[in-house]
Every structure is written in C-alpha cells, then in structure tokens.
Image (cartoon, rainbow, N blue to C red; front, side, top):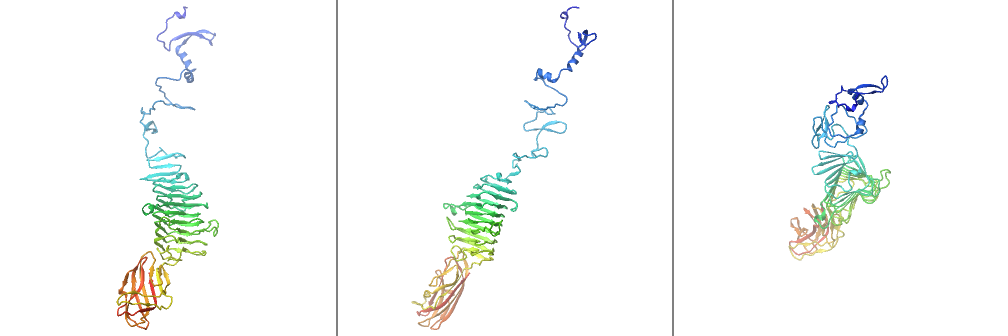
Length: 546
C-alpha cells in the first residue's frame, strides 16, 4: 500500500466518507478498521461541553438564535445595547417592559398609578402623584393652589422655621423637643380634633415664637410637663410705623391647653382672636395669657378653670392672673372684648388683671361667669374700681359674679350752705355758690369739685338722665329766679324753672336727658329775672344716671 501522504484529499467531505484507523478495543486487539465520518462526529458531540467551548473563546460577532429557556444562576446579565421585545421593537424613551400574559413588549406606564398592581411605599422613600401630592414615610404633603399642606406625624415633619404659605396638620399625639420660629407669612398649625391631635411640648421656653407675621392655631391640644415651658410668644410692634406697626393677626380657635406652666405672651398685633378654647391645669408662675399694646383683643366662649396641678389637685396653684393686660409700653389697647367665658381663679389668683397703667378706649366685658368658690382675698376682676383710669373705657354688663359698670353720680352738700350767690346784674346767669361743700355721695366714672362742678370720666358716650333738687331762699328780697344747668359751655335755658323766692326756703326740681361724653362737665347756675337780690342754696342733690 502506497504512503498515505501520496493520496489526494477528498473534496467535498461527506458524513458517509470513511477513514482508516486502529480499533484499540476490537477483537483481535488493535485491528485495522474503517471509520465513518458521521460516527466520529457523533463521538465528539457527546464529549464536548459548553464550558469546553467557552474555554476556547467566549466572544462572538455573529447573531445568536436560541430556542428554549435561558436560566442565569448566580450571575448578572449585561446588555450594552438595546433590548428588543417580542414585537422586534426597542421601545421609546420612558417606556417600561410590560407583559400581556403571552408576550413581552415595551409600553407606557399609566400616570394614574405608580404601580401596575398593589404595592407599598417603603420608609425613606418618596412617592409623588401628579406633581401635587407627596407621601413620605406615612405623612402627606400636598400643594393646593399656592398653599402647602403638610401632615405632621413626627417632629421631623415640621422644620425649625415654618415654611411660608404652609398649613401643618398634626396627626395624633406628637412630641416636640425643640422650639419653632414663625416669621414667614401665612403659616398655620391645625388638627382635626383637639382631644386627639395633641402637641406634647417637652422643651423649655415657648414652643412657637412669632415675629411680625400672621399665625393660626386651630383644633389642637397642647400639653407640657416642663415648668419653664409655654406655647406661644410673639411681637408685632414698631413705634415708627402706622398704628405702631400693628398689622398682623393671631387666631387661636378650638384649642385645648392643659397641663402647662404658661400659655402665651403677646405684644402688639392688630388682632388677637381667641375663641372656643379651654385653659385648664395651668400652673403659671410667670404668666398665663399675657398681652401688651394689642390693638384689638377678643377672648370669647372660652373656659378658664382648675389652674393647679393635674396630678395633685388643689396643689401647685398658679400665682399669676389667668388673663393679664399689661401697662402701656409703645402703644395701648384700642378694644378689648371678653365675652361668654367661664372664669374661675383659684386660691389667691386673679381671674383678669388690667394694669392701672394701661388704657383701653373701647372695652366690653359681658355675659361671663366669674366663679369665686375657693378664691382667696383677691378679686375675680382687678381693679374692681370701675372709675380707675384703666377701667373707664369698659362696658361691664350681663356678668354673673361681678357687678355691672354704670356711670352715675349723686352729689350733695356736706353741710348746710351759708354762702350767698351774688347777683350783680338782672337776667345774667351766674354759677350757684355752694360754699365749697359739694361732695360725691355715690359715684362711678364721675367726679365732683367742691364748687359743684361734675365731670364725666367714662370713655364711651351715653345718654344720661339728670335730676336736680335744690332748696333755696333769697335773704335780701323777693325776686323771681330761673334755675339752670350748664353743660360744658352751654346753659340749658329750656330746663330752667321760674320760682318766686323770699325768706322762706323753697324747693325746685330740674330733670332732663342729654348726651354725655368723656370730659363733659355740669354746673348749677341761676339768674334773677326781676331784680338783683342774692340767692342762697341751703341744700341740693345732683343725680346723673346712665
């Protein structure tokens, strides 16, 4: 047999071609045999694995088409190009790979939901719906118009400085350990139920400090166990500006203040409106509700009671007034309304103290219940002298437990008068001489000089009823006299009565109604209409009633 290298190569090679070789395991052993190419190929296919192929080389530049499933265990799939879906599409920007149950395709995710099914937003993640509603760790944040609405379920939900145009909604009982500053416009802190939505303040000083801005508290409960803690302080006052810079409003409605050492201390502001609130278990030793230089102060439909320790009743009494109006500083009070309240101070506490160095132009204290059970030596309302300069602007009426205010005067003579009223000219009125004996027997918001001049000190105008009784005679002759009342610079001739007098004492009465203002004065005058004989008034009673 010729050498193998001298034979031509077969072309083409087919599976049915044969090669010659040694069969090691044949009988007899090492016999020469023919081998089909197809058999040799089948032998190799059973011996070579994918790992043998990858060991030889794991990159390719050709397309790979596979039929069946691909399972990747313990590794990653890296896609350097696009991912083609079942419709041979790469999709467009922003689309997600979706399934319709039979094939996978690129498609748009509906904007109405952040999930294709039910799901949960985990902690420390934020979900925003349609750009206006955000959920962060269970708290809602929403933008309505130009107003932000933020739910507060933990202290960190409310920043140290409140954000402008934001309403913070307290949910449940939330403990605050550090104070908040309010100087941005249009901020409010509210709840839905003052008995369940409660701020527990564990810091010292004021929880909220308001500076030159409006602020609202509504439907909230407040509690604190700290003796140096209060809820609210604020200032809106500038002597160099119109109305002393008082142009902001504090609104406190439907709140429950319990277990506190102090409540609020506010200076200035155009309006402080407190309505339908409860103030209980306030162990105040510095201030309760304290105000100064407020333009308009309104406290209505609120309850003040049990200002002592909640854990040990009738101990730890408050030692300062429940409501306190301080002395004028830069300005004064224009109007003060306390209406429809229950006010029950304890021990030696005052229910309401109005500083004698303050002034109020228009005040109304009406329809309140002032309870004094358990009260010591001090007054529910101080000062209780309604003629004091600090009180003359107040209309006090319809209360239970304190007297109504009523501007009135009863002036008489302290002794029999021996001074004559000298008549120098006929038909010329002169003031009646009372010998310096005029005194006030009863008076409120009126004063009388010894010459009989009566002056009104009440701030608010009113219609007054005047009644005068005069006992008189003429020691020198018999003439006719006309008795007159002079109001300010005006002599009321229509009220005069012509009377014939002589040595016999005769009485005359004058009655009329007139408008009375702060500073209005009254005097008794007389004129002789028939001669120049003198007159002597031996006794008189000058009565004015509101």
